[in-house]
Length: 296
Image 1 (cartoon, rainbow, N blue to C red):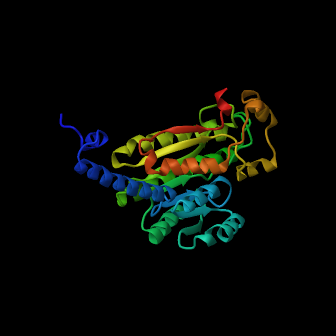
Image 2 (image 1 turned 135 degrees about the vertical axis):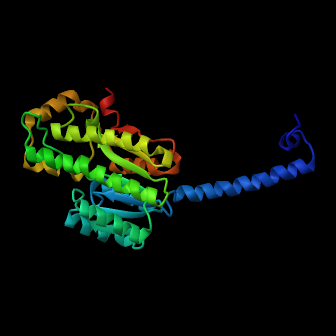
């Protein structure tokens, strides 16, 4: 085998070899600078749609994407949160944000949301199903039908309908898009919440895996994050009272000495990673992110 010019250089070989090595060194330095610039704005030119995005975790996800160069389409149903988001976040990125009031359980509203996103930014690259509500820890024998219907509608049916529209837009524009579903540790356990929330989060994991494997040939990925306890506005459902027996059961199953609040900012960074090219081999995966709470 012929000796490499780089090997000859190390052994004191020809100036030609040294010159080649020097040129390559300059190329490598330039590439490194380019990589640094790309790493600072890894989502530049991309567009992310995030549901429930004006408060709590959704807001941190939107801010993370904006800081990393993306355009964002944020939707929420809460007028106060929308106003605050527009004043404190969107105003700093006037050309990069589309804020839409949208009830994710209304399919006509979802059609309008996706149409507005396409009209403003041309296409979508990412969709994050973040909107969700909690139940009150009611087991099956005590749950109210209206609570069941509402939790399933927001936590499972809405993500399915958002996923449907996102996939179709990815296919229309031949985009290797990414979908991230905000799930929960309740998606693999029976005692982490009430029957409605537990069923909804088990369902979202199935949706994630089916979408990931079915559309993998088109370069479309779908992953889920099974988050632990976070300080978000999802707890607003608790204001009208909890099923204390259900809560006690959960606490016995997940001892408080192992509990660790998960930072919404870090979950947002995980969402960003799962959407990025660095995660191109991650598909149909359900990532636990609970600080080790359920690993005991």
